[in-house]
Amino acid sequence: MLPVDRGGPRRPHHRAVEQVQPAKGSGPDVRVLGDAAHQPGFDQAFWATIIATFNTTGHFEDSSTGIAKQRGATLVGAWNYCLRQGLVTGRAIADPNSDQDKYNAWKNAYDSETFDITSIFIVHMWDIAGKPLGDDDSPAMRPPRLDYADEEIYDILRRYQGPGAVAYSEAKKRMGLYYVMEKYNAISRNL
Image 1 (cartoon, rainbow, N blue to C red):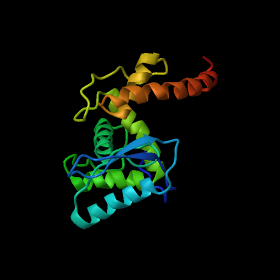
Image 2: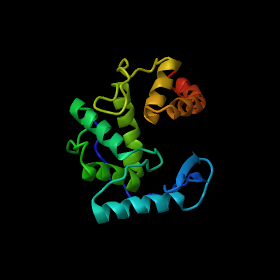
Image 3: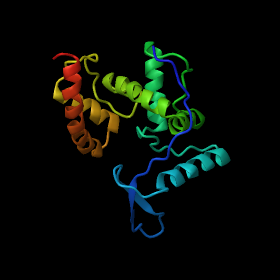
Image 4: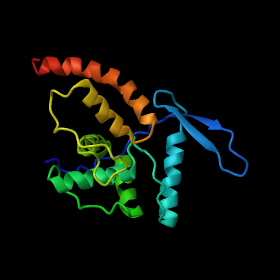
């Protein structure tokens, strides 16, 4: 069982963005270019707006946050699943329709790198189960094992990114990192 750790303050994280000419009468359209490039202050200013809006209106505009880039709705769904399965303890089941509960999960990821990193495991376990009550109708996979084939690893990485078309290309990008890490993990497992 993994206990919940609330952790301490976080360091800021930045992503480069591109401002796109909006359609007449609409607001600005911002596209994320990637985590490797930097535009200082963008994420922090964006996240500060989300926090201020919620504190003022009680409305939560979900977005990804933290070094693991997790959304409030994803965190609520994943933690609820793992709590119900007995994989984790230490928190109550959250209401996936509650802006307050989604904001609380999002704010935990924003404030605590420990919670953020721990939640990667939680989200992966939910992904493997097919994201019950989530945003993806992928079938459940076989239980976690050290002998997953590359296609299974790719599918887990794709599910982590979400159900959209971008998730497929993002998962392909992450396979290279997986191969590097697996090379050394396999050595430590004596495979």
